[in-house]
Image (cartoon, rainbow, N blue to C red; front, top):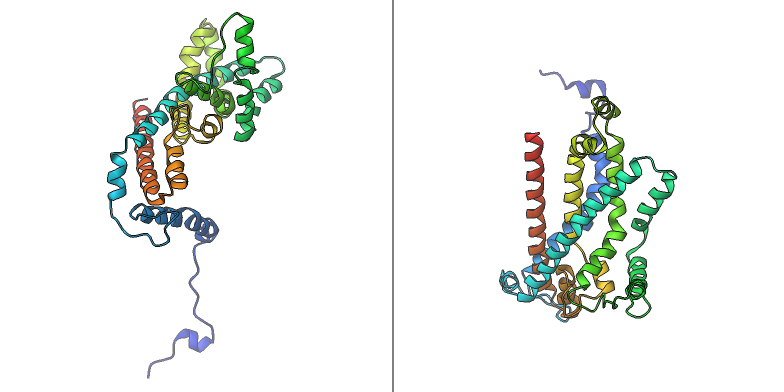
Length: 303
């Protein structure tokens, strides 16, 4: 006759299987991520395959018709072109100016806390405050910039109502507002460069410019790549300051693709079509991100 199991003989219960501690710690985040990210994305993808509208309660499945229409939508391509132009015009100065500001502070200017506060403080302002401030600066009659132009004998500029100037005006406001974040990243990277590199270069007789080109900039190359990637992704998602400053005008000459999504979905009531455009734009952002990371990895391998 076989003997009873050990747990029956001793009266103890079999050990319960428990979740790994790491999973327990991550479970609240996973629940929130699923509720507020995965589920809305799945809902948006399904909506892009329907003719969903704010004025209709029972959307019907139409397959890929919204995507086909979006690929042939000239206004969508035009707004996407505006987004790419803004990304190009804003990324270069936001990287270069941030580097110059960080180098200026890192040289040891007196009152460094004042410089750091002045450079970083605009980044802490909400977009509504920034837009209102720059609307005042760009006023045709009472604005500061046209007043300064008039003081030197130049004609005023229609900063936000001239198609050839409006995009540059938005870029300038964005530069003042967001350059502080890149400045902070560069400043942290500068402080991480070992001092012995500069000491050895000084012993060899290298001047300030030689140390900049041979030590500082190569040491900052990885941070420059990271800042460039982050800035491109942020610029591709531009919406707030454009909407508040120009509402995409004049004549839709500054309207980015996200504002076009807003107009199609919440003004034209075509939620399904807007969802399809959003997923096309999402695919473009993913491709841009993958390409940038591939370039960064290749550079790291070569170095």
